[in-house]
Amino acid sequence: MKTVPITLITGYLGSGKTTLINYLLKNAGGYKMAVVVNDIGEVNIDADLIEKGGVVAGKDDNLVALQNGCICCTLKKDLIEQLASLVRSRKFDHILIEASGICEPIPIAQTITYLEDQFEQRGMPKYLKLDAVVSVTDALRLADEFGCGEALEHAERGEEDIENLVIQQIEFCDIILLNKVSEVTPEQLANIKAIIRKLQPHATILDTNYCRIDLKQILDTGLFDFEKAMNSAGWMEEFDRTDNEHDADEHEHHHHHGEEDDRDEDEDTDDDHGHGHHHHHHHEHGVGENDDEGTAEEYGIGTYVYFRRRPFDRLKFEDWANKDYGRMIIRTKGLVYFTDDRDLSYVYEQAGKQKYLTENGEWYACMPAYEIDRLLATDEKFAHDWDPEYGDRMIKLVFIGQQLDRKRIKEELDKI
Image (tube, rainbow, N blue to C red; front, side, top):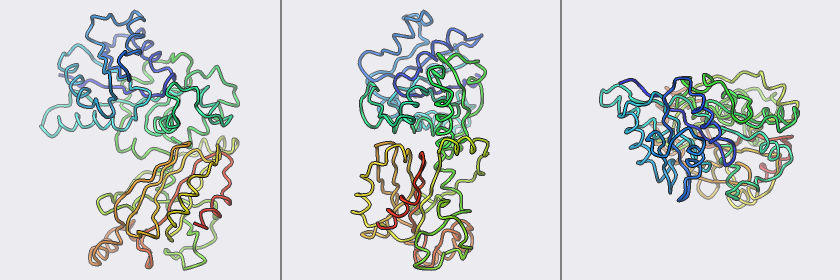
């Protein structure tokens, strides 16, 4: 039995996912495709549209509708069963999954990857594989959101977390299908791409109208790699760099690495590790190509990384987090800890108006001394992160935004 590739199609409400599915089916070019559609609600609107398009007859079994739930959470088991059933039927050589507009892409990819791993663990050939994650993105809506500073109020769901989903779908994908490009000006399009490139430096961006593309650009690409996808977001790339860390409290104690202090404070960056013992991992990938840096600078799209060792005051941090920076800050993510519990690390995350603070385990500094000594002697990255006073405790926040006022952000955070 041959391996059946799967293309996962994500995108928020109204971006054009169903249009893309219809287009792929009508122009299959010899592909025998099955479609798994996930839509919240008792009536699967997306499935109906596909059927009305005359491509899939209602009685055919190559359209699977998963309803009354989301395949990234409550319908995981259903998704596994349906994928296994489609592969066993041996009728198809490609599977398209259209995720609901409110689905997060990572859990779906994890479910499919889990299936792949099960085959390997049992010594069986892989019967399916996740070939690519395609994020269908509405250029006009992004122009409104990132160009005019308007909220996504016209989104059907009408909730603030739509913007968070949009950013997650851009950050975790292999291909960004930038749809409806004819409805924005060249200036708006360039601005949108500059922002996308900061959020997601590695994905292929394809301009399109009505999702009309060459099938070869998104089918059988072999692009998906879970580890790379998890580490491909722009904030992660900035977070992993160690060449321009600059301690905001350097005036209070010597820099822990004894490095030169002639770096620009506005070019701080970070490094992902400072989480609890069980979370320690390194992200190994080089700094991305800078082909888009000129465009990003032209449109005022930039990044800033705030770094220091001293903990935040929790109440002051909550007050700061409740401030509205508008379009100046599009995305924030990083590690923090607080004076009332110096041993526990947290991940702080902001996308648009949505903000989250999640426990992330104890710092490595809480381990027994002999374990710390062993890591200092054997792990170069751990040694780099280590400070004689604070251990691996740190504040490290990556900001992505437009016309970032780095001085203001730094001054406000320094007071917390």
